[in-house]
Length: 125
Image 1 (tube, rainbow, N blue to C red):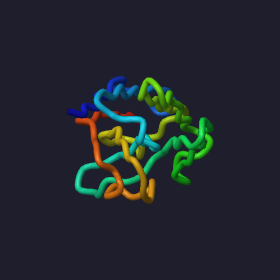
Image 2 (cartoon, rainbow, N blue to C red):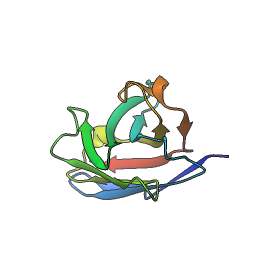
Image 3 (cartoon, one colour):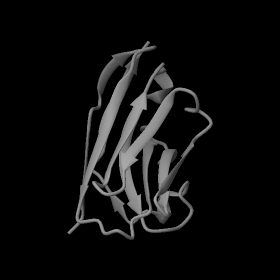
């Protein structure tokens, strides 16, 4: 059985930083992508960042709204992924979800097979 558990959310002032962590269990070596999505109240879940592993190398991708502010990192063997969030803005407020997939369009929520329960990030102005 697969479990993804996020941690690290909280309340922070605009301009501050938070580091989210996601630990997964039960995933296989076929897992090629781990990612972060966010969902604000009344809105659809949207892509934030992803890290993909292929033949021992990794690559990362970001939504335009977080480029230069957020950094994703992770370990393919340990099946962990982190999201360092700097220069946070009130519009970053949302529930952040960790997700894992074997293949597919990494920016699309439907491509992911496994999800965590989410962690709340609130940025005050």
